[in-house]
View: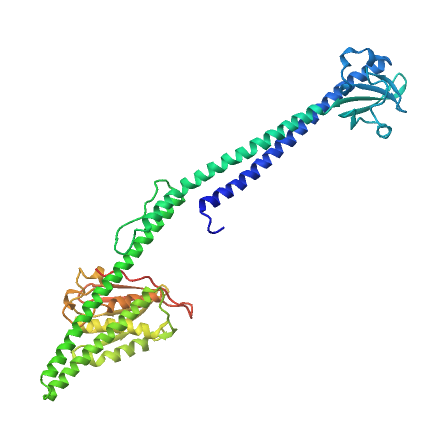
Length: 467
């Protein structure tokens, strides 16, 4: 059944439902007509009974002489005594009783309906007890049910002919309706078969009607836009990574060629190897950064959460960079409450703050300040310096991959440091922002939830595409 086209399945389902509806409607009409005919017959019998009762109270031969009650045997009337003897009857019914003895004994104080077949005719009889001329009699009137049976048979024939014909027409209409409803889906399918990575910007045709098919087309077009955006990010990532890899590889090749050109000079050989080692470290760091961002793009970055005391954590980072800051004539200061804590992945948060301090050492000036404060159930981690601050044009793109400010171009950076900071903050369910506060200097603020469910696997959206 799964291989049957949808329009055929819809048509079959529609046909089954219509068959049930037509069958139900046919049965309803049939039984309604049968009930109406029976009710009409009973009303006629009661009216004739009233006429016969009036005649029976006046004379014993009223039925024989009453012309308005004369008719065929199937429409006759009788007056019988308690033993079943016919006292009076319409012509043709004087020789026998319309009621069987058992039926006659069942008539007591109220009228009783019976059905009986006489001379091949199916009759409906109404027996009514009556006291007339000082004795108890039973008035019996009858009517043939042949007319009712003929009317019901005619209705059955019409239903048996018209029902299948109506079902066939309804099924055909259902098939055409299903085909018309699925035609936009077929057009979208045909267009989808022509869309590939090389056909950027193509979209599925969306019908004008505001229905489920149109909404499906809109959702699919939105999905195509997201896929195109992701593809563009991947292309940009590959292009930028290729560019970043080309520089250290070219330097390594140059150093190796210089070392090979003067193999007898030990100092020059050592310097070349030292430079090649530095470029190797740079390549290794770039590979680690790209791996981290690839994990974020896959939809989840697993975190090993633990309770972190913020002040010792910041002190450890300050100690790590203290010597480099001193060599540059600068200092690293920490300001945080002793009891301030945070639930997070220590290694990832240390990586984020280390990237920020590394940026300030490369591109900033003055004292580097590491601060932490609690605000509205969140912990804010501030890293600021006293340099020239971020370029105004760079701020909107600060956390995009391979995005670098004017002052950083031509240096050894890769443009991934702030993107990794944003990825780690998002993985913790937090946010990050870069600003130039009043006065001099640049500031980056990580806003992280103070308490997060332990053992959770954090997810984060993919960073914005580098421009």
